[in-house]
Length: 376
Image 1 (cartoon, rainbow, N blue to C red):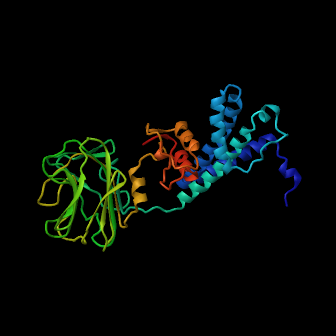
Image 2 (cartoon, rainbow, N blue to C red):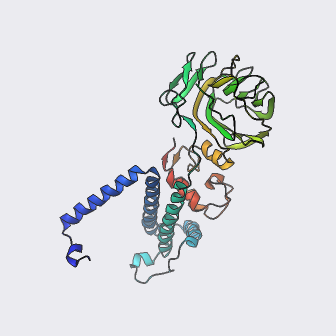
Image 3 (cartoon, one colour):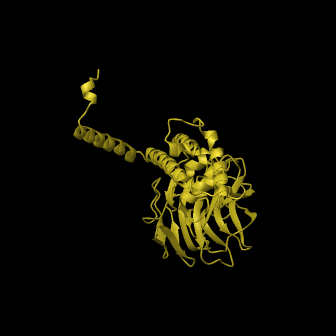
């Protein structure tokens, strides 16, 4: 049983207790990155609610009738999230003059709870885990397995990317990274600096006439990827703009193989099983004895032993889903876009619907607040 005297701590003891509890809580959050993101998201939403209330109260006296009409309409959209009463006679006079403030604060508080739940759901969703992963920040080190790559020719890793010259640079792995049985997904980012006039490969394994796999550019300028001994046309142009792009191939045995470029499904082709014969996996070069080198950069190579969904691949391709206005930073402007289009399927800012479910809601708000700050 707790005595009343134990609850009446002197100020110094209360301060020490708060510090101890905060340290314990922070240690737990630091130990669990998912918990940290949940905590950060909830804190950010509560901050937005308080800031929004203060701004609304102070701005009411200077808003033009047109501005106030627009703001009131936005608040009314948010009211669907709120169970707050329409008025409160206990509130100070200056707050009673702008009753929308009550709804705005209640809506933002409710949104904070929704955000916390959405963040927790994402943390517990257990997204697919790669069997091999390379970010090239420290050579070609496998962050998920034990298949480190060897830099050959003159290939280097610099600034967290793999750089190859298109002449004789490539990476050789000691094993086949891409599973030869069962489903798989291959995903990577690339930047082609010189577009060749012939064939070129980003990744390959196997050999001619033996059930190979490779992903790159055909002599006709289109994407190509081989399964078994047949060049499969895609009809999709390989990018020539010298910019960063994302590409992924998702395969399920007995079904078709799907090609994704920048998170968008662009081609589907037949896909016989892979073979264990021939060369182990290479980057920026065709399997032996071919050349077909790539001149450019490669980053974020992930290999999965499962066929990722279109949603999973879209999320891999999007480095900053909360950047609604695409200015490389997630900030108050992106937050305002999402809140201003709440409950709708926006045509002016389709990125506001971050998960593509047709409605801007708490999941999209969670993406904005969960990726707050400068984009990677």
